[in-house]
Every structure is written in structure tokens, then in C-alpha cells.
Length: 223
Image 1 (cartoon, rainbow, N blue to C red):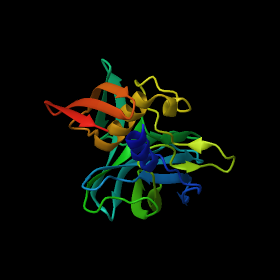
Image 2: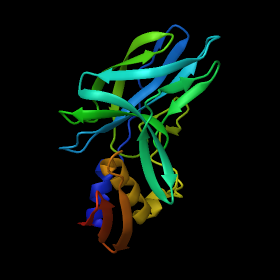
Image 3: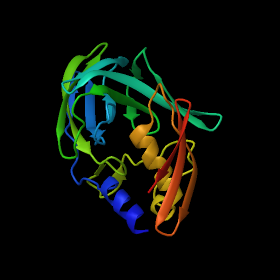
């Protein structure tokens, strides 16, 4: 599947460095990273780990970034077999002594109205504001469009492309072209206000055909 292999080869490149870390008060930020974006895209996903090392609960209440008109907090879930995303307007709770992971398939940051799509290898400056701890500047490393964002010190992959409701084993995904196509298209084109349904996906030899439904329209894509 030469054409298909070339497409995914560009999407699944991974980085080998850990993202920047930051802290303010009892809150520490680890592994902040964002996805690279396809040309013309206006929305990007951001991920990180938040630790509360203090004695009082805190909450991430807002975020902003130089390269985006706004940064929203979103949560992904599956309803009737369809993946949907909603804005978390009340913020993200960070309980005492707990770790909160913002990752693909769950809670995450969404960079809205990005004027220049993020490119792999760039650094995106952002500010996170917590209810108690206050504001802290964070640098997000830009990783690949799909696949692991970076590799940990132990050599293991972190922040894979696996999402709930897709019945997808991250290690087995490359062996199943149809699953890889579904996951890649979801990452690239799914939007909170316009959920993407990818079905069916037919792979035969060097060709793949994927159909999707979005915003009331049915589209076919040849790979």
C-alpha cells in the first residue's frame, strides 16, 4: 500500500524529547505538548499533566496562547457509538495530592482560531491560570499530527493516539490500516461543534477509501 504508507509515514513521526516543565505554588506542570496541524487547520489540541502537591484543591480556570485567538478546555466522550466533544466551561478540578492528565480521548486544551498552523518542532507559548495558584507561563512542544507526542526517559511512548470508543490497541493499530485511518482523520478534522463520524473504511491493496459524515454532509476520501 505505497500511497497509504507514504501518507501515514508523515503522520506518525515521533519526537524523542520530553516537553518543558513549569510550576507555580503547589501546582506543577509536566509534559506540555500540542499536535502539529495540517495546512489550513484552525484548531489544535494541547495535552499536559497537572500535579497538585499542596494541601488545598485547585482548578484550572482558563488558558491563553500567543498563536491562538482563545484556548478552551474540552472533554471527549462517546455517546451511542459517536465520539463527541464538549467545552468544560467550569474549568478542570485538580484535587489535593492528585494528578490530572489532559490527553487525547479525554480532557484536553483546544487552541481555537490558530492563524498559523503549528508545525512539528515549534514551541508554543501559553499561560495557564489556576483558581488558587494563579497564572504560570508554559511552553508547549509541537509534536506529530498523530501517534506518540514524545518518548519518556524509560523509553516508553506517552500520549498515544488511542481514543475511547474506538476499540483500538495502540500497539496493534499500525497492523490495522482501517483503524489507523479512522483515528488519523478524527485527530485531523474532528471539531467540538462538528463531530466527525468515519465510516466505512475499505482497504484493498494500495488503495483505501474512507467515508465520513460531518455537519450533515457525507464525504468520500481516496488514499
